[in-house]
Image 1 (cartoon, rainbow, N blue to C red):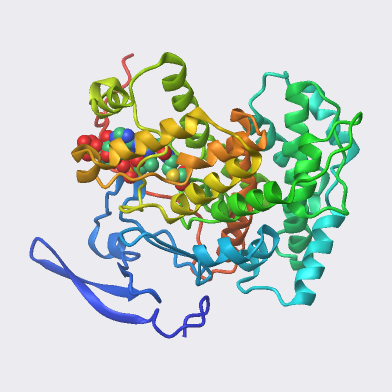
Image 2: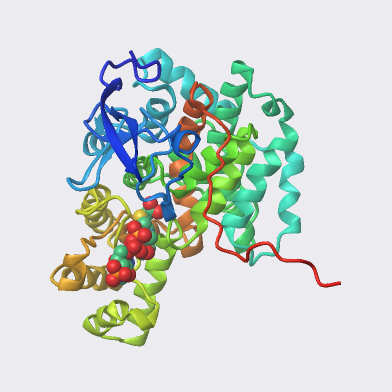
Length: 435
Ligand code: CMC
């Protein structure tokens, strides 16, 4: 029985034989609950003197995990066994967060308790408000988010003791709730409007929209369709197994660093344009095409040209070699939302033409490059009124429960050790310092 998943089929199934010179090494083979197989090389170096080389960890499993399952060839994504399509249709972000963090959907009592805990922690310490005075108004909100989340650890020092479960639950609820407030405040700071305090009578997403868009001089009513769209977007971003930022959270956490610091590191990893920053880059690319009047076909030729160093942002994925299931859901939701809001966005038309052109081009077909989650999400955020440089912050709000779930899983994993990859040294051999 596997202690982590409670399933039988993660036991040794077979072995692989590795021949190195005249020596043979037997390596155990493991299978996951969905049949994925791995060769266990844990003792390889000790027994053979060899390490494995895998830049970008393309073939390296860093852990066994029960949080999320992806089949990139088939375009399947499930959280704790539930298909993303069903969660997107029926769940909300709070419930999905509970599912990821605790492993099962909550019963009504657990759900109410969780909601209550999130409500209770929606405000940030008043002293933290003043941190915003120190940032220039041009600061990127991802930098502010990462700094402020790290700043939380200075107020809640009990998080330094990762052994105490009650404190961990408190840290989890504080993070989930306060990150919303921090994000909304950084938006208000960037546009020079006063901060709007949370209104705990609203839902999780409703409260975020209220803090983002309310101004003291006007009433603000949360549009239920916008709230629904936001729930959907956050659910779709909530986890994606060992992606760059989640792997970062795990790596930092493996050194026994507190959860706030790990999440802060995850936020910075997410910021990059090859990862979560792609949603901002997509919109910038669409805007550039729109403003320059460039033909879509010509632009596609540019991204195919290796000398251009350009990529079609929102396309391609390390794991998906098929349509990203999240992109499919977002594309439909995008049409619905824009219809509801009566928005006619020329960028949506450009995105559709780009997709159509790329998907019938052998460059993209041969490389299995399809739209990913970031391709259409920015158009929805834009329709909601969220500015481009906040897009990756929205991704971070969504990904937070996934990061937390992985951090918790790692902490209870008997196999966990500090993450410390090896390398193959290619520098100069020993030489003497000239005297
Ligand atoms: N446009 C043009 N060519 C591409 C693209 C693209 N978007 N993505 C990959 N390629 C080409 C790449 O040049 C390479 O070609 P070749 O084999 O001729 O050298 C081939 O496809 C394989 O690319 P790779 O860089 O080896 O693939 P990877 O698995 O290391 O990278 C990726 C995955 C997502 C970083 C990459 O596809 C990319 O840069 N996409 C654009 C950025 C983007 O949309 N990122 C968001 C990912 S989804 C959200 C998230 O989880 O972060």
